[in-house]
Structure formats: C-alpha cells, structure tokens
Amino acid sequence: MPVITFANTKGGAGKTTAVLLLATELVRMGNRVTILDADPQNWISRWHDISAPMANLKVISYVTQASLERHLDDHRATTDYFVIDLPGARSPLLSKAIGLSDHVLIPIQGCAMDAQGGAHVIELLQYLETKVGIKIPHSVVLTRVNSMVTTRALLAVKGLLAQRNVDVLETPIIERSAFRDLFDCGGTLYTMDANRISNLDKARENARFYAEEVVKRIVKNQTALSAAHPAASRFVAA
Ligand SMILES: Nc1ncnc2c1ncn2[C@@H]1O[C@H](COP(=O)(O)OP(=O)(O)OP(=O)(O)O)[C@@H](O)[C@H]1O
Ligand SMILES: [Mg+2]
Image 1 (spheres, rainbow, N blue to C red):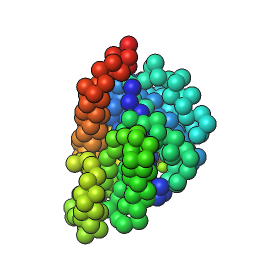
Image 2 (cartoon, rainbow, N blue to C red):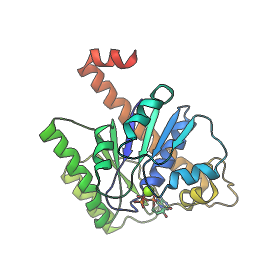
Image 3 (tube, rainbow, N blue to C red):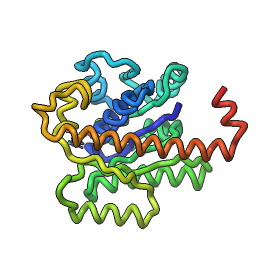
Image 4 (spheres, rainbow, N blue to C red):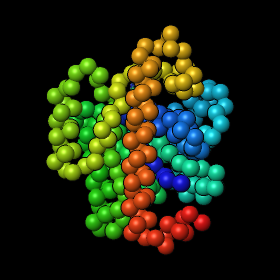
C-alpha cells in the first residue's frame, strides 16, 4: 500500500487540490484510499464533512508528526493507497512524512516562488539519498497551468527542472473552476452538475490522466524495487 506525500514548502502551490483529485480518482479506479490530513487548515477534512459518504475513502483529520506513523499502521490492512496532505512549510512533519513515503509529489505552479518551495523539498530528498542512503522516488506535478497559453515563467520553471534531472509528470493540472468548486460543493467531479460547471468534461479527463500517470510511476517503482529485493517483495505480498 504505497504512501504518496504532497509537499511544497511554499503555501498555496496546489497541494490540497492535487491530493483531492488523486485520491478521488484512485477511488474511482476501484482502490481503497486513506487521506491523512496533516494540514492544520483542514481543507480535506472540511471537504469530507460536506460530501456524501464515499465508499472506499477514509479521511483522517488532525494528523501530526507524532501520530502519522500510528495512523499508517492502523489503516494499512484496509488501504490500497495512502495520500498525505501537508501544510506549506518547512517542518519536522515534512521530513517525517517524506521519510515514510514511497513517492513524493511536488506541486509547482509556473512561477519562481513556487519553484523555490519545490526546490526545498527536492534538496531534502537529495540530502536523504546522498547522505543517508534513502532514495525516495519523487516527481513534480505542474499545477494551475493555463489551458490556452504557455507562460514564459512556466517555460523557465520547466527548463530549471530539466537541468536538474527532476522527473516531471507529463500531465499538468490545468487551472479549472471545477477543481476550485470541489471544495465549496463537496463530492467529486462526477457528482457535480455539468450544466453548471464549465468544462467539467475536460476537468474529468485531466484528473484521470494525472492519476493514471501517478499510478504508472508507482507501479514502475515497485516493480524495480521487487526486482532488486525479491525477498522484501515476498514479505510485502504476504
Ligand atoms: N488546478 C486548479 N484550478 C483552479 N484553482 C486551483 C487549482 N489548484 C489550486 N487552485 C486554487 O488555488 C488555491 C491554493 O490551492 P491549494 O489549497 O490546493 O494549495 P495548497 O498548496 O494546498 O495551499 P496551502 O499551502 O495553503 O495548504 C485554492 O484557492 C485552490 O482552489
Ligand atoms: Mg493545502
């Protein structure tokens, strides 16, 4: 049961939106998903409170550095994917969540400040790999991307990430009112009224492609891991 953490030390990068889209898509694909809401602003928990009960989706609120590992242990047997939403800050909670993750996703909007918040996370991941010998796969997901124009700032951010050999998802999360409205209306992209929300079909397609790409990354990493450590994978399968 992979643990996926969303991290960017700059606030407002699009973490919570990316968490919700991934989690709800994973459920739609037939998985049991547990979201660990470790952001004191509780956006995911508030969304959950106003949404109709959803089979196969659990949201754990008020997750802290001290309780994170216990929540993972408590729900491991009934979860296919854990998704962790973090606050936008550098903290011991960030390091702890990253250390417990199978994949870290770093949402970055096409702007320099956001990229810097993402770079903090990437530096932490590189430190863990070179100094501590812990390699945690990670990818950047570009967020709030304009569907019509590619801005110069976005191109600059993409260039910087390519220079540093950072994996970037091919599917960016586009700026869509549907993604914003989820937090006001509750539910999912599939319970929204297509007559009232513009481009809902495009939003659904975007969320699906993004989640499929994340799943592909995780399956690839796990296959590589079990090839390198067959005994460990037998243990996990048991
Ligand atoms: N793809 C998108 N389309 C439209 N609006 C978006 C999109 N992504 C994020 N937003 C909006 O941008 C704002 C910040 O997004 P979000 O809350 O997801 O960021 P965050 O990184 O979780 O922020 P924080 O660091 O405060 O937790 C919110 O108002 C959200 O509705
Ligand atoms: Mg958030």
